[in-house]
Length: 276
Image (cartoon, rainbow, N blue to C red; front, side, top):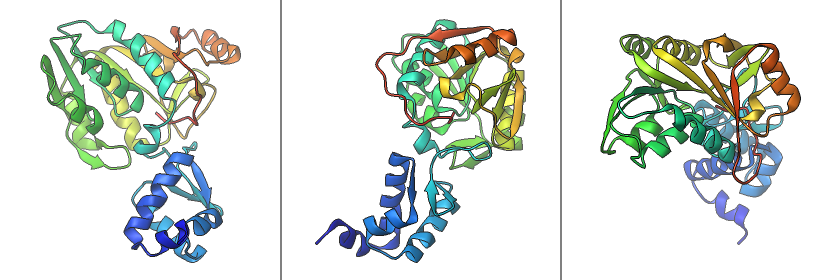
């Protein structure tokens, strides 16, 4: 029995889960490729993809599906967790230099700042207050001794695995932290950009609530734009980017008088990118 036949005999939910896993791993696929792999008709594949799109896992495109972001759509958090890992680790390691015991810090719902949470879990910087709306970070730090964790409430968004909306913004506005660590989908012409308006409103509130702001990005986000302007880069006290950044992209930061530091990446492997 071939693999396609085995998948075909599974129920729709199991097939859709396997399909999502493949697309998240590969970044994209055509309907014809998926039909051959799973041993079902193209029409069945399209029905499956409609359901996965409804769940916010993938995005249908002409003739297929993608998990990769665009200037209008952000990618699913499970896809973002797999991309640019070495680069995100490099900027997070550098960001740790800005954290001192006794501080209150805020982490947005980006997989870049999640790398900071991974390092905080080692317990090397305590006591510390950490404020975040990112469920991944909340789960990571919930049992960490020496860290006072403040989870921001709001409307849960499974696409981003975070809490958003008006109640989240209001919760952020009631706080004042020492440093906010944030990421964004694109940086271009002296501005930070993101695809989704409801994400932008929370990020802006977070930046307003902090005495100091640090932007973490991987190099693929430079010289890119997305639908919504978040803030001018001048709102950040420091921009951290990995050493994959091109000379041209860094010149653009220089021209806009952005204070930045380039972070050395351990290892290599430039994954598909543009996801926060």
